[in-house]
Image 1 (cartoon, rainbow, N blue to C red):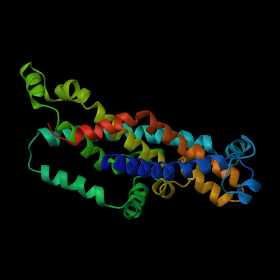
Image 2: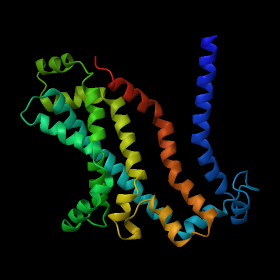
Image 3: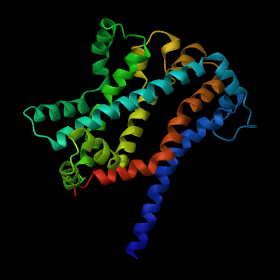
Length: 274
């Protein structure tokens, strides 16, 4: 009897979580096909017809294609660079002993607790001085650094689960430190690599505050700023605004759905040592 009650309560809780997660997105999706009058007179409910005119208007009112190109370039470059640096750093910290090891760990730990808003002014000054303000390169470097603490600890936790005997065998066969890392360790870290990569990609894709502050031209800005663009310039066209919202959030949802198994397996595998 207790088992049945537990199952019922669990099912009810999961149902509530699913509803809370899906209903807001469904509301935005349905509203993107409605006219302004339908949105204002009836918040909930299906549209009278699935018209694509709002999406056409959204692409006409805002340079969404430019925003898309910038987001794709920045997200991919920021993810690759972040993984490249943090994976090597995590491997060195796990396998090597050096005097500043504790300091390195402390710096990455501090990076987890510093709020992004506290970094706006220092980053703005640094990018201005280095002539990287209003450039895609500047945003790539900022996003790479911003996601380093998370990526570092995900990779470090997983590398700890890899038996050191595999690397010892490679060293006995004459393999060097770098070759052992590339040929032995790196292929084994694919689950954690996928997990950290997706987390970093979503951070780069969805980040708004830094992208708005550290860029000044439309041609250099990313997709999340499109919503701010609509809010400030075309706030009366609600259908187009909802269409732009769907255009912004759908890629990140699809990315997570496609790679959710890798994310879960990577986090679960890195949570237990041995």
